[in-house]
Length: 253
Image 1 (cartoon, rainbow, N blue to C red):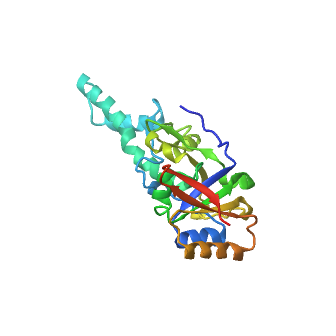
Image 2: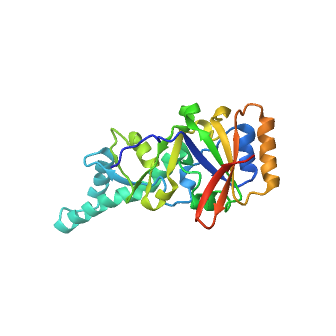
Image 3: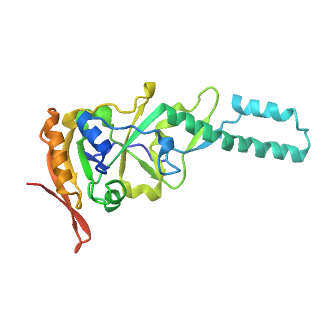
């Protein structure tokens, strides 16, 4: 397995459509840490559960089987298959349990990604917020997502559990999402609090999409000006260069 790594980029980026949720982010300098069980990727934060042989969970399963099975060869084979199926049956419950304990918010290392602007930036009519994440390291964390061909495997035993494997689970995605160049911050959600505040000084820029209208641009500038604690925020425009098939980001005058 690949090792978890912290991004080497100075800035990380978060794409938004322009709506009330973005306004809350800017007004309250807070981000929403979602329950990963509700992510749009059905495999996000999912894992395969492996019951360690001899663990209490496996022993309980075998005791239950002993009440109904004899020791004939074909039933022993059935027992082996059923034991393997136990992990599959328990996995959704473990996943749901893990999801209730944590909150995740996602960023990208790239501000000029076509697909990210299309999927998360309201088809280039939204914004991309630029964070100097080291201004508030414990909040943004800066841990890069690992992309692999298969879901991570979590080993479970009654004595050890698998809490120490949660970071690997939450920070692994399947390879077809690698275009996102994703960075994640993960928190424990005590009392279901999912909107902690970030240091306003960490927000260093706002990038407007190619199709963001002037009314929205002026409204966002006004919200930031009224906040009082944002400092040195620069504004940019992401222009679609159709002849070159790329996005060019330049400062707004």
